[in-house]
Image (cartoon, rainbow, N blue to C red; front, top):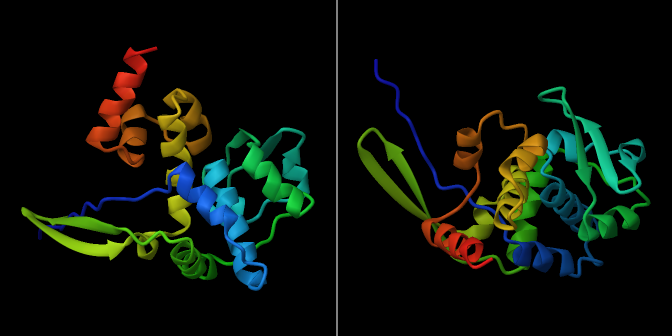
Length: 197
C-alpha cells in the first residue's frame, strides 16, 4: 500500500490587498461587513480562526491582544496595529463572531468584490506526476489565508522569524519557512534590500 502525497501552492494576501478589502464599502451588506472585519482581524493577528473569531474585550488590553490559543494552549501577546485598532474601535473591542463554514464561504465573495481575481496556478504533486489547475485568487481564500498572510507579510517587513513564530506557534525555523509564502523573486528582492542597508 502506497500513500499519495499532495503538495499545493498556498496563497497569501499582500498588505495592499488587505487594504483593498478593508476599503470595500459593505454598508449595504452588514453580514459581509462583519465577516470582512473578522478577516482583517485574522490577517492582522496571525491567530487561527478558532482564536480570532472568539476574541472578547478581556483579551484586548491597551496596545496588545493577550490570549491563550486553543490548539496549543499557549499564551500569545500580539501588538495591535493601526489597522487592527480601527477594526477593534468599530466594535468597541467586542468583535463579531461567526462559524468557520460561513466565514470560508463569505471571504471568497468579499475577495471577489475587492477585485482579487488574478489567475493563480495551483500545482498538485501525486507520486511523480504534477497536475496544475488554474483558479481565480478569490476562489482559494479561506480562514487559513489570514494566518499565512500575517506571517508572510511580517517576514517581508524584516521581522525576525523567531518573533513571528512566538505568535504563529511554529516550533522550528524549517517548518515556519515551509509555511510562509515566499517566491524566488521576492526572496532575491528582499536580499538586495538587506544588502543595501
